[in-house]
Image 1 (cartoon, rainbow, N blue to C red):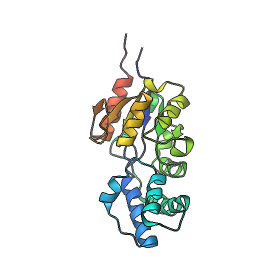
Image 2: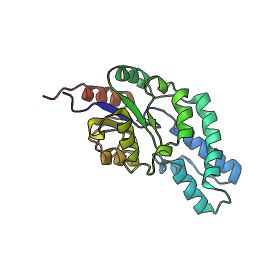
Image 3: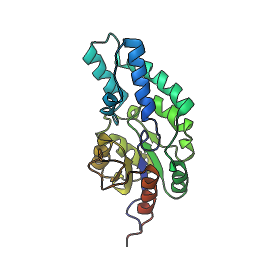
Image 4: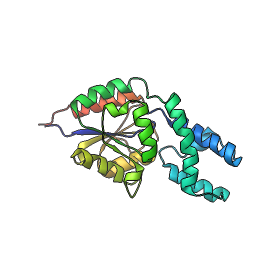
Amino acid sequence: MSQYLALLCDLDGTLADTEPQHCAAWLEMLQQDYDLTYDVHWFDQWIGTSDRVVADWLIGEHKLGTTVDELIGFKQQRFHEMVRVAGKSFPGVLDELASLSEQFPLAIATNSGRADADVVVPALGLDRFTKIIVTATDVENIKPAPDIYLLAAESLGVHAAGCVAIEDSAPGGISAKAAGCYLIGLNDKVDMADETIRDNAAALARARQILGTVYL
């Protein structure tokens, strides 16, 4: 029988090419609403973390007279508009997901909140491939804690140790490995990966190969 039974995928930067829109939404909001100027290099440090972490840091750093939820709301409004207009997946990803989802259970495990996932997933047509989407809103501890991956596996009715995970960030990689998944990393930031494949569609193809391997 197969050692691995299901696939757990991160969303932003893995299935959805939305990190540029996350970045643009933060930078635009901070410049227009608070006269704070940051660039894409500043945003790089936050990839893989949740909006709540970013908002909390900004409020503490600049003593902003707003709440975390309000700041996230200002950013999310811009992000959702951008995704609905220009959101896209990575080349070849939708075709690979179509093949995968016909053969194996698939869940999305994201550090994004439910409000973002509920916009991104249908905007990109990812809801054709799975209805199981676990977000930062659904757990007590976000990545790098294993909670999101553990809940995603549980929702599919499998153990996390029987899942292949694909991640593009260090916190996500730590989370997947802590849950017990076999981890495919998309770049060198995912330094705990069992293997690294730098093309998103190729990583999905490799996951399909792993899931289809029969161990006697």
